[in-house]
Structure formats: structure tokens, C-alpha cells
Image 1 (tube, helix red, strand yellow):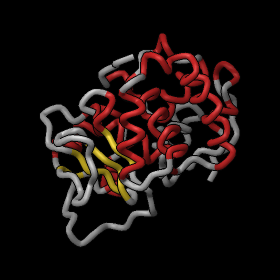
Image 2 (image 1 turned 45 degrees about the vertical axis):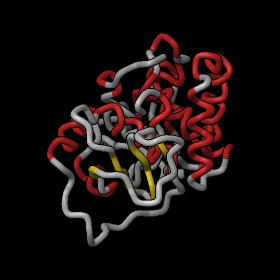
Image 3 (image 1 turned 180 degrees about the vertical axis):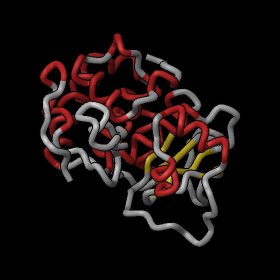
Image 4 (image 1 turned 90 degrees about the vertical axis):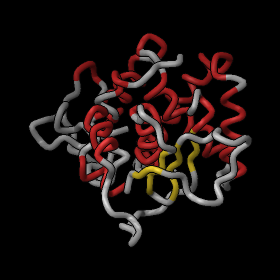
Length: 224
């Protein structure tokens, strides 16, 4: 469900946040070496409740996958997700079979075995961002995961009341699909913070990280 970039100075002393992000496999969308800032760059529900994350694995192109739909390519471009990453994730319309939902229509997207599946919608930017961030989380280096976990725990402590009761329902839905509660909690917090939360409600470090991993996050609908 859920190697390393070169060290270089980051504005505001935030270098530690970005050290260890994967330039190839992404959870991160890299931007090539021009770049320390741009060049480091990579990526990191019907309401809060409608997205699901399932156990991930390194993805290979399946025989049934043909191409990323044009509308999803456009949404990915708005979010700063490279076309090659959308292809690796095999982003497509339609949810996988056997997905457990607390009620019909609850799940609007899922990240399963390294691929992204979305329920058909005229406005896919929000759900694509949310599911893409599951892939970002899955590909964090161990040291980076420790650092981001600390930021997410602080975010949860500050905003847990605002997230409930939808957050707990979301976690229960993940557990019903085979994800451990602890993994689901961090993974959903990561997507909520980076795609659904206004800058004013993020710490400086978490805001910088979220912008780093999802350059087009300003185009997502904020709920918190």
C-alpha cells in the first residue's frame, strides 16, 4: 500500500523533507535535474469517505489495459503527474471486481496492486489526486516515511475532530478490503492532507512536502 535524490539546498531549510524520495518509482513525480526545487519535484470520495487503498505491489502493464483515457490524461496534467507515471499506474475508468463498499457508490476510486481505478465522473481531478498520493506513500524510502509519518501524526492531532466521523468509516472500508488499520490510517491521512486540505491548515513543513509531491494540488477541491 502502500533511490534517493541528490542532496541540495532547499528554501527554508526543508532539505530533510525531500531527502530519500524515489526519483524513479514515484510516489514521487520527479522534475529532472535543473532543478533542486523543480528538479527534485515528484509527486506525493465522494466526500472524504469514497476512496480506497488496497495492498500495493510493483505494477506491470496488464494485458487488458490499453491506454490512459484522454480525460484522465488531462486531469493528470493539471495535477503535475507525468504521462509516463499515469501509464505505469494504468489509470483507468471502472472499479475492480470484489471491492467491498459500506454502501453502493461509496468508493469513487481505489489504488490496488500498483494501479489506479476510478469510478466514472465528469470531474476526475480530485479522485485521481487522492489515489495517486497512495502510490506516492507506497514508494517513500524508509527514512522519508518516518519523517512524513511524524508530520501526519501532528496533522491528525490538530484536525482529528474535523475529520470524523468520515475518517473512521474510511478506515473501516479499507480494513474490509484487506488493509491493516495502522497502514490505512497513515495512507488516508497522507492523501487527505496533500489533496483535500487548505494550505492554512497544514504546517509549514507538511505544506512544503505536499506541494513537492503534488505540484498541481492547488487544483483540487479542499474540504478542510
